[in-house]
Length: 271
Image 1 (cartoon, rainbow, N blue to C red):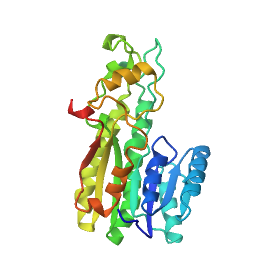
Image 2: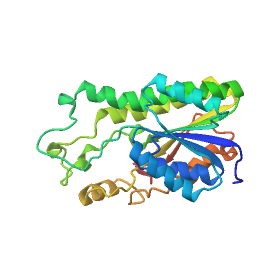
Image 3: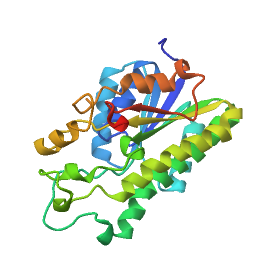
């Protein structure tokens, strides 16, 4: 792919597990970057590393809560004052609880699920994603150009197999469940993508979903073993294996693709 010039990509959740890799992928093909996150310490580290690696692009960091329309609009106003236009929006931020610790006390079971927890999860995964689409998508519509990439998960297609969260794979023994808020959020992202693709298609804005599979992140051995059984490629993804997909969706290589889900999950969702 030819390097892009005078293009800017905004990545939410830029300090998370995959945020830095999505950012590097876009910097690699010539995008300037606007990186936002709530974790100041991690975001500072990510920006420093990217600045050292990509000397010829501009990187802006901003501590922003995407659940707040006020904060997102303020960021947009600041970018416009600096004459920076977001050509590509990557909605990567979400609350994805690590399923590492499990105890005798039930966690995230439906019967004991705290609505505050649900509201917190969907406020980031659904509401925050929508706010960013609304604010920066509106700017794209004014200029009649832009790309929105929503990051989803294989759990946005299939329900989580809760059996993997116990060594025995016995559902009756599972105590720590993948929370329903994550599943709701990721399923909703697919609907949001289709809606925006049809709504703004006439404005030359493309909106697609990148569906990711499980990523290796030093999970417990029993959990990796259980998950691998459910993946035809028999392994978890490496953190850098989604780079080309991000570049494809952000570039003219996908110029006739909108409202679609690009699934890269090792084949897990075909079983």
